[in-house]
Image (cartoon, rainbow, N blue to C red; front, side, top):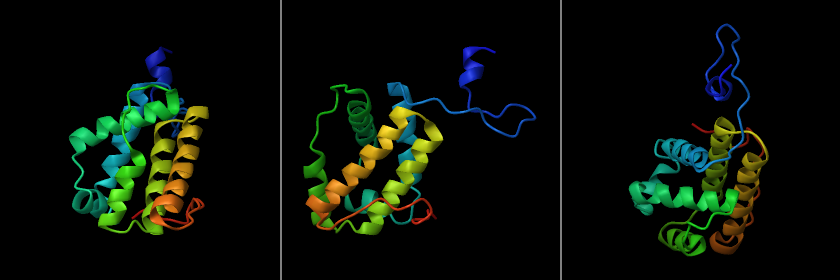
Length: 156
């Protein structure tokens, strides 16, 4: 088996199951995760209006910044320069970010991570997302938030 075959996420003929996913280990992995996640966001009836109508996100500049952010969190790189708190405080001032937004964002993030990787770095991406959202909810949005249990916040 070649390395490409070993890391492929396609199903082996006749097995009906995909090989185990590898962990998030490269910037390319993070790129795929971020693109996968936000591709789902733009079709989500709850979150899409927040990103498109309220925040008026310019995806061409936003996606690379998010890749830099997550590479900093997961790998300790230094490319990300930004103010996560200030950006979300401004967003909340335009239109309140509610607990259901946090639940949906988090549930969709977990699903995207699960589609893209498995291992310690993938687990860190999930735990950081929970801590990040809990901190923003408490200090910016003005309420306590805890991650929903799997299945508690269904995606449409």
